[in-house]
Length: 107
Image (cartoon, rainbow, N blue to C red; front, side, top):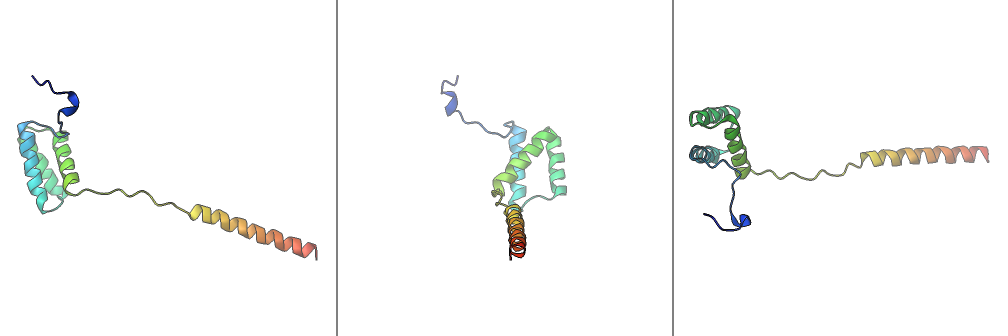
């Protein structure tokens, strides 16, 4: 019986069955050389099926391991000032046109 509080228990997002752990180690070893090509991923999924893992589990393990070994930082999008720049240019042009018309009629 585990009488530790629930927040102290460690949990993994990976499947914890023995075949899943073996497959995780295989994936980790295969990704040690770099990211897997599509054909290599398909071969790994077939291997997982032979080990008794489902396609979803295999893809989950592949994705998690790839993220662990090759994390990607998602940058915040930079502000796009082109819309504001367009509005300012149009307003400046309209101001020049109105000012020119006023000077022509009041001269």
